[in-house]
Amino acid sequence: MNAHQRPADQHPWVVVPGIWGSDPEHWQSRWQGERGASAVRIAPASWSEPDPRDWDRAISVAVAACDRPPVLVAHSLGVLAAAHWLADHGDVEVVGAFLVAPPDPTAPVFPEAARGFLAPSRPVVAPTALVVSDDDPYCSAERAGQFAEVLGAGVLRVGARQHVNVASGAWPEGRRLLDTFVAESVEGRPNG
Image 1 (spheres, rainbow, N blue to C red):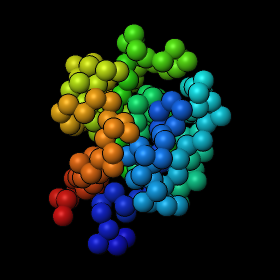
Image 2: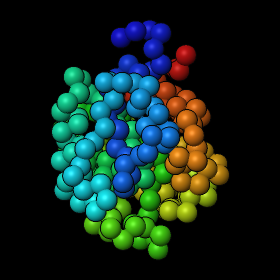
Image 3: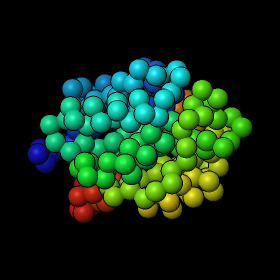
């Protein structure tokens, strides 16, 4: 590993967007573009009519495509998919999971097409950070805290950032949080 790389860049990534995928201006797409081939985006057949089994398979395929254990970088509905995948596949080695802006499947604004996705219900083995906005219309900070407790995840609160989506631009604060998470929580060394 290159000592001059950012901590998260020393590992492959599996990018798990939300429903419909992340458009090119979304921070997740921008970060993936910066990583090139070392970031693999899941490719479910059911982007617009999400099927949890299809997304689970898509995460498995993306993880298997990595040459070594990856970091999962998930947003929105991808958080629910990644959380369930991590709980179901605890025997598959991943470096950790950086889960941003989970939606609450019981919220009135949750997309009807995604009703097959459930709230996290089991702990995960991998180091996990749940990034929470104080004013997310898709999930209250309190409910996100409950998800984190179930998962055994650390909570990273980012203030009032809505759903931390395309309006967040390149979201450099989030990129720093990801590096800190990988460096301190996963590798056990301070972020330099």
